[in-house]
Image 1 (cartoon, rainbow, N blue to C red):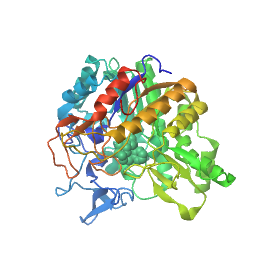
Image 2 (image 1 turned 135 degrees about the vertical axis):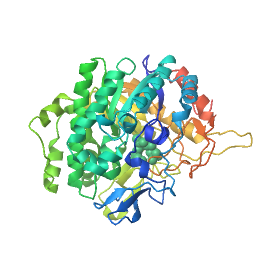
Image 3 (image 1 turned 120 degrees about the vertical axis):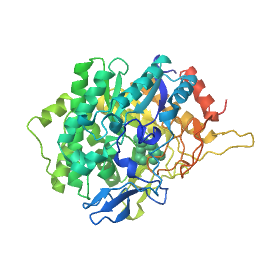
Image 4 (image 1 turned 90 degrees about the vertical axis):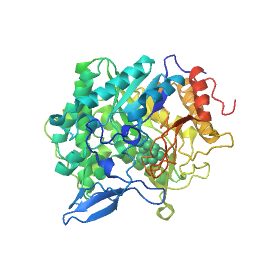
Length: 490
Ligand code: P53
């Protein structure tokens, strides 16, 4: 049982959680730069100012009120500002990735480092040079860059002036950004991902939308779909060898019982939470079930005459996805609690949970790989997977992260079964937060995913020093053996 030669083992990060340098090198502000840290109990907050100049803290999930603007409060800690400081540690960090034997490294480009106000008029050459150095450094070690054009970055200027993606002009601005990068890096970068976890994008932080009207979200996402499709079309003109993919948050889903109602509910939730997005981007059109749902909700998409044609022409080359956990879908209203990253789910009695309450389900990864491959017959790419956990030092000042090793090895085992036994076509595996970064969901630092520890705490204090965990050496062996040596405790 072994994986094909050239399988892309590596790791993954995103600029908003890793890069930092938020006011350096000419970078502009993005919406996440006004989002504070939180915890499992306390949601991350947006700091905002109302029309009378009064300052408020508002839950990131409640969204930006119509009459408020973003506000940077000097007395608050904003984790994205320095994050774990890739901006000043890139050489050291890439050398560590190379030491582990990475074949690929997934990262994102910060839109506002290239266009500080989101548009080409603000072009920041220094930002381009920053990424050029990084790509050259990766290639020096033979590491293939996998580049996400948009990982949760929304330029604050575009959110404030026009509600971001709600405005059709944002498609053109994003395309200017993407085409510039395609042109400049056509020699260095072959694999591109348009939008990270497109199915999770919502509200002010990710889309720039104010208020709570979900019809606005559908319209903004229509623009995101168009931007992605046009990226694929323009990218192929610039370099026909480009592989341009989409990215889906792909939690597994099960009906709670064999009651057919549970099964139907699971289908409905899977469709509206996941498949709508991959159907549009892999098949090239809105599926009927989604059009019906939009109609029932009274959401009428404003479209131009060639929109549907563009969606059809801009389908992706591969489907990349994140997988952390699975959820149980039930029709019993009263039992619903929020588990893991799913809104509507009940506890799965067959699974253990992480310290953050995310169910741990390695077989679910094999299931998801099969479901996606059955549905689209497109190459897949696992671009996020991992265990967010507390790390502690032992007496020898080491981090023995056996739980992380156990999680990853169990998932890799199932991934290999999907490829070798089931015949799923898989390009690679880049576990999430291969070096410790800020948590997207909670803004915490103590929720760590890395093989490499970074000395930083939840309030932003620390030396930023790097240190290898036990899993660092374990994963190095996994890569060296192309997945044949994955046992948790060698
Ligand atoms: P954290 C929610 C649910 C599932 C995946 O998440 C999510 C989120 C956003 O929190 O995001 C992806 O850091 C995302 C990464 C993120 C990672 O999952 O909350 O692409 O940016 O860090 C893990 O533990």
